[in-house]
Length: 638
Image (cartoon, rainbow, N blue to C red; front, side):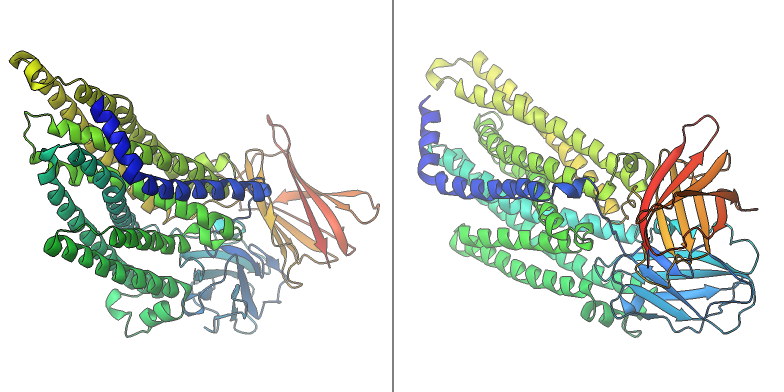
């Protein structure tokens, strides 16, 4: 009873400032989440996603059929993000896989389009356009292809560019990208988690025990501090090496060249000095170097003067969080319109991960070294663990709460619908992450609800030396040793699962989230561009091109796929109903017919769009044994 009262008075005198500052920071982060949700409720109803520089539309349109003898003089492709002009190209091939362009790819002044000139008077044939770009917003690589036909003839097999946003290659999903990102997240978690563990868990616990005449804890303090500094310095060194490696990887990947050629071909200079990735790269390097210097000053203070500098550790904490901020600036959250909302969530998510997973790793890497210095037959080991666990559990509970809140918000933006959670590769990988997250909570709950309270109870009920006989002392020692063994096994399992979780995060950040399931299209942003729309209705995905998308005769081409990705071929009818919204002209229905040799492709021509203004288009698909699938699209003609 007296010991518990003494510990309470100690923290009232010495720990209140630290608790207040930490509480204020965490409550501010939580309020920021709530305020952002309240400020943008519509964002969750209809998110606008633009993950990486994906295909948006083109001229000629994807899967377009142009009149015989009227070959285009150029190809222009619009993307969903600005692209890096140094690493973005178009190529156009004929059926013999020979290039028919003039090799003069160039970007527009706004950075959203690529244009390339074609040889004059191309013969009637099927042509394939291959695009490759690097997003100037998130640095990711996207590659894809689509085809168009001049005259008569089939499209290229397996080229469904109406869904080019989905078909763009997951070129970033490779061992190098995943490995670098995984080690980056692990290094940041160890750095931030170790600094936070020393400041918020270890020092308050060890000081409390020494303050109550627990001399046995004194010899472990220096050992833990030295090990913590070695772990901090090692994490900084790894992050420095990873930053250099990521610059080399990005230059080699963007230029599609070998790493040893990136200097001679200018790729490294372009990436580091002429791209958004380079700005973030230099900012990160500018944070890592002073963090390394600060860690060395901490080492000098401890080794030469036996001091534990709180201010230097606080500076390390700030620098660690800032490093995580540079990772957020290069993440999915920074590459779309609601970045002002998602960037704070992403940073809070990363910081909470670092505090929690980094702290768990400290229990595996740091604490055992201190426990080994304490006699196993005494109660000093259990007293130390009983002092550490409650402090860390409070931090872990808050971190897990923030992870659930921010993770749910980010997932709602990135997935857009429940269907994408199971139908897309990104969603299925996210499910694996959620399963691992739930598994990590199991040993954490064991520490919080069973091991920690039992250790505290055992220490509180330990009788004095005069009151205990040999049998009672042996029983108490056996109980504490059993609790310690259980804790060692469970915390090791928790740390192992946490490292695997970060590996899945590395996979997720190398992938593109799925496109939205609501109908999206280009509208009529360019008078020369056709109208293109893609979306979901019932269990089907559709893609529609209205070419040329102007007043007069138009060709309607639609691709239909089932939920498993197979082309939809068994239909009773595929039709489009057109209604003029500015005046009463009735509703006109256009029946689309299957295109020979192209399963799931339907086409029709009509001159119903005979007036500029606002129109409504309803897509109707009738299938045997299913309810009719419909989708409504509003659009305008100039």
